[in-house]
Image (cartoon, rainbow, N blue to C red; front, top):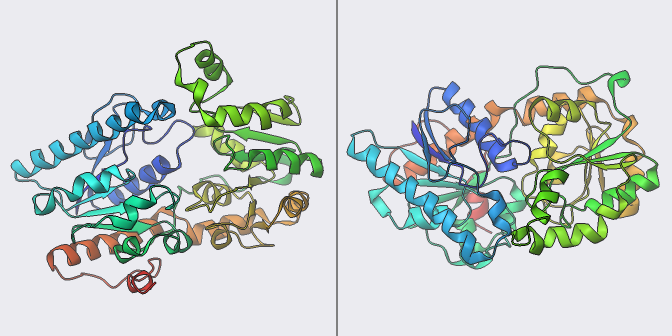
Length: 404
């Protein structure tokens, strides 16, 4: 197939540090091309992901702009979609049309492509986020038999409005590249545990700080704050009176609940990490923590941790109970006290069991095969073309959601 893979304009693919969605796009693009498909990537100019072509409206990722007021942000998404639509028309005019668009751009991707009707390829939109966000859109959107959706977990899709569920073909769990190195031996492990996420209230960073203090375990926080990748970048932004970071809600919250608790020793913020630094940190940490306050839709970082052979401690919310096998690959907690107790028990878990589960459930080939089935379903529903293969067992059958 020839697929236009739309990652949106926010971060490069693969991302430098933070960027779960963009990591998924990089993994899927690589695997689909390995399986013989043609994939053109719509992203930003600084992306370094190998593909069969690139489309962009911006040279650099627009993620830092997300802290700005809505009128200053929404145009970026639409400018990006303008470039996508032009690419679709150019390829069609050249006699080399796309078979399908796989969009990962929230709301604007599906909305813009739906307006094109039969003049554009059919669309599969992956839902990477909490569906209570932009709920009015999902409760009223009609893809007209041309735009369909895929969730990243059953629990995510089950929380969506009825109209969205009727247009959702299934749920495909996320995948990550499997490291070539084996899980770290005990002698290679750090003393610390890791949180790999944005520093914000929904991610429960303050819960992690208190739980690790109670368990007597050092904590490393790796991720951006208020759109800034590290302390130096944050300080530079704060030095500019006109920078939108001053009004960012994550900064206001972290200033009260996170930054005062950092001591540079038992609790450290190291900023975003990427590449070999990220891989080494994941592999050598005692555990990766997910003390979330929201219903996690997909859990990319959970898959990354288990692939590295590092156990997980998580709140039992959203998709996390479907990703963590308690007592084998990690622990699930219902409250802060239980979370702190679980942090103190991570030495009981076998890193090799974590890696084995990741190889079976979260390998790139598993995700790509599942998406191939959904691509076939999109083509079948939009054009009447027969499906070429049976539904892959990793994909939730379409009727599973249609009846809810």
